[in-house]
Amino acid sequence: MFDPAPPTETSEPAAPRRVSGARLMLIAAVAILLGALMIKHDLSGDSGPPPRPVPAAAQPSASSSPAAEGVSAMKRSAPVRIKIPRIKVDAPFVGLGLNSSGVLDVPPAGNPNLAGWYEDGVAPGSRGNALVLGHVDTMTGPAVFWGLGSLKSGDTVEISRADGSVAKFAIDSVEAFPKDDFPDERVYGKTRDAQLRLITCGGTYDRKAKDYKDNVVVFAHLLPPE
Image (cartoon, rainbow, N blue to C red; front, side, top):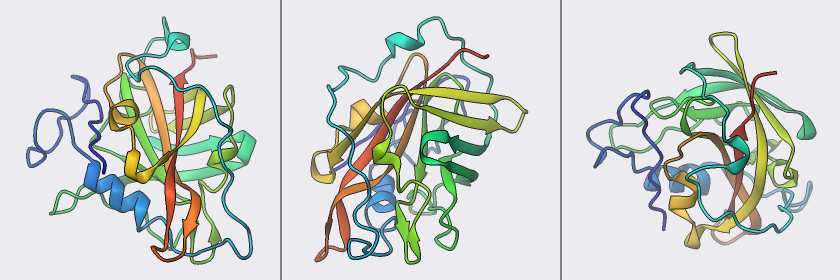
């Protein structure tokens, strides 16, 4: 159901050769990560479902963000911490790689306050499309990206990086997509500027499948340094 092709820029490491083509195909990896492994506990009976994004007009393309025109991308540096002030997220990063089957590893389930970054992909702040994933809940309750669906256009995301710099992003839109009708190219496609995608599960919880029916995606672009 997924067929994403995250961007790979010349300044970024090449994707592992076992993944076909010059552009990494993370379909199965993201499907597993965001489908089965991000849903550890049905919270509909206690905390209620996670927040749903407010419907917004779809962006026509992921290739560029008009608001980011003229903003210089940053040199590659690994992310170390993510802060989303509006929903009180303040969490460290763990690097994610591919296992021997070519499937993306997942953040440790024992720590709900942990964000994952595909470290062979684009670094947040660098030119291209950086992917950040987080659990929506675990067996113990809401997790790091529980409140993602309540974010709105104009909210900010701050990512501290290993070189001491901070990449600050402005949110363009927050949208929910059915897992069986996911807009792969729009979410994972190449971008000419520095963009960010935050991804988790959301929507209605299917008790039979033990899974949420949607993925929540935050689209954001890099802001100029302050």
